[in-house]
Length: 202
Image (cartoon, rainbow, N blue to C red; front, side, top):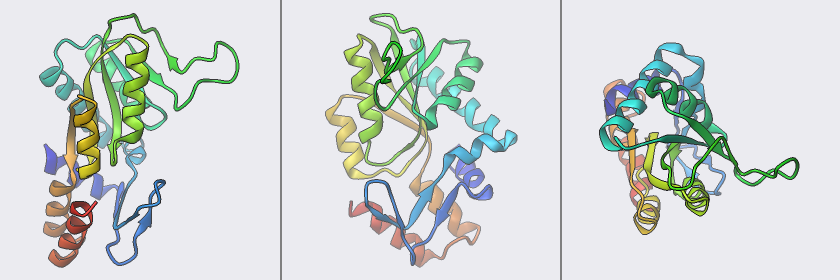
């Protein structure tokens, strides 16, 4: 599954690999890789594989899940489709509370004590998804864990998840992706090592 999803992400241009011309992430990190999983929503065949994969992760690792909660904004559509496949309620968590109306941060019905799985598209340093986890915990939810499409496997992200006592299960990861990228000649073996060195040094 890891390599299959990696192959799909590469084939639709959702992953860009530029070891010699790094991207700047929102965090300011200079990265040889950029992943835009929003593009998967535009390709029905890929979208179906991803949503069925996320549903399978929830069933396998979090069988007691009662509600899916998407991260805003990238996780919302994936949470909605996956919830439909699993016949589960869903909602989403805003990056901050609305400044009008009921000033909600959590959208959708969330009962105290509900067993929740968070749906995220991409994990890097883990900061944004853990902010969502914290908001859900403050609202009284029992967060079982996270399912996501892709993780870079950054040490900082792993350490943050461990410190917050939350587990993530991703459909694919950087190691699988660069293996496929070399096999299909998107990058050279040397560039693969450059990308892994970047990840391992963060």
